[in-house]
Every structure is written in C-alpha cells, then in structure tokens.
Length: 168
Image (cartoon, rainbow, N blue to C red):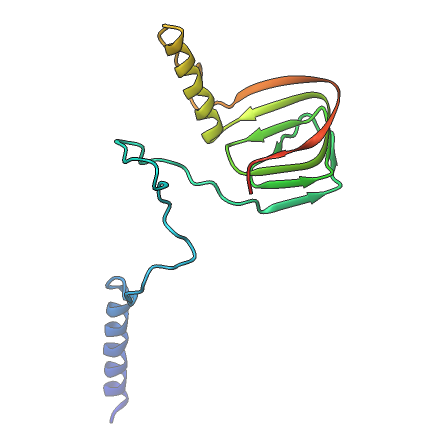
C-alpha cells in the first residue's frame, strides 16, 4: 500500500470517529429498580387526601455536630439548619434559620439574640401572619420586601440554659 492510500484511510477513519463522537449523546441507559435508600415521602394513613400542596419541602437530617462550642460574633450568623450543638455557649449571637432540623443540648444563651428567618421558616411566619389577620377580620398585608429574611431580636436579660430542638 502506498503512503497516500494509508493517509486517506486514516483521514476517513478520523472523520468517521469525529462524526460519531460529536453526533449526540451515546450514554447507555439501563433500567433499574428505584433505590430503597430514599423512600418517597407519604402522608400518614390518618391524613385524608388533600387538594393542592405539591410543594412541601423536605427537611434534611442533622449533619453538623459541635461540642463545647462558644461563639460571640454578632455580625456573623450561626446557621441552625442541620446542626446539633452540645454544651454550646452563645453571647449576643445572630442565628439564621430556614426550617431544618436542629438540636441544642445543654446550651447557654445570653445577651440579645437575633434570628434571621429564611426559606421555609420565613414562609411559615408569613402564613401565620396571614391566619392571624383572617382571625382578626382584617385583610392580610403582603411582606414588605420579597425574599428578604424576617429578622426578630429577643433580649435575654439573664443567662438561659437548657436543651431544645426538633424531634430526632
């Protein structure tokens, strides 16, 4: 075979390979049974079927664990969602909460406590304000700024200790 013939065959194979590689997805698709690790959420048997409500958020488990932790950084919020804190001390701390699981065991809080409610927690406060307005016979008001956190501050006059959190 001549060098020209080998060059033409090599060129033709290269063009064909490039054409196949660039012609779309060639990912094999295999049918598999759904994973048993993540069951689909279902309503308890005692709850009747409802209309609407397809956007119920899922709450992830606690994944961050702190022990003997102390924090006094009022400008930097502590993320509560998915956090377990054992023997943690907070003095004048800001917290950011979005509706996730949390656990504070043997905590100590002092000073002003600022809470920023975001996500599902923010929506819960807005919904409760809506229900309270209805109960008072008033038209509910819209939130002032969409998607801004709702901020609440509680003044802790004396150090408070205890344990609290969402059910495990």
